[in-house]
Amino acid sequence: MLGLKLPTDPRWVNIVEMNIDEILTDHAYCEQKAASTAISLIISFPEYTELTQEMIALSREEMGHFKMVHDRIIARGQTLGRDRKDDYVVALMKFFPKGGSRTNQLVHRLLYAALIEARSCERFRLLSEQLKDKELAEFYHKLMVSEAGHYTMFLKFAREYGNLEEVNQKWKSLLEYEAGIIRNLGTEGRIHG
Image 1 (tube, rainbow, N blue to C red):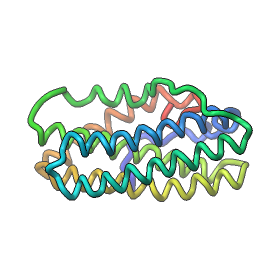
Image 2: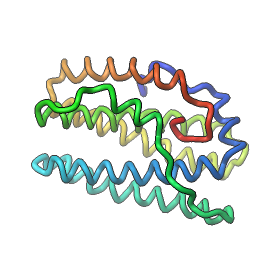
Image 3: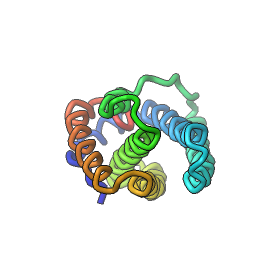
């Protein structure tokens, strides 16, 4: 369903299990950044009313997810660690050229967001199926369902606002590019790393 060209190596879950506190901190920041992306889309493209309405709801939901993850960190007797650069997102954002028409800029941002949500969904599925901590596995199952909805929403908007054939070709190319990025990651306790 997600269309990802390279699945995550299931051994990634073993790395996560040895670094649960690290993954929770990384996950918390991913949720913050997702909320920030939604707000940024509102600021940059306010004339797209339906998108704006959905991004208002999404920013609230993502901050709710941040709180849920932060509460888990606190319950584990930890504090939120410092944010680190997300090598996956940094590499992904190099795919589309900067500039271009407002429509292209919007479509590119929507496609990036869709792919990040798709990869998060795939990783959350692995965590929900393989974590030994059943409570945490259930937590990730709930979030996986949410991420799948976000992925489809972003992709739907990209296809609605751009030329459908062009958007589908860009999506296909972006998926291929992302597989190359993922091939070199997956050795750290990070959501995308």
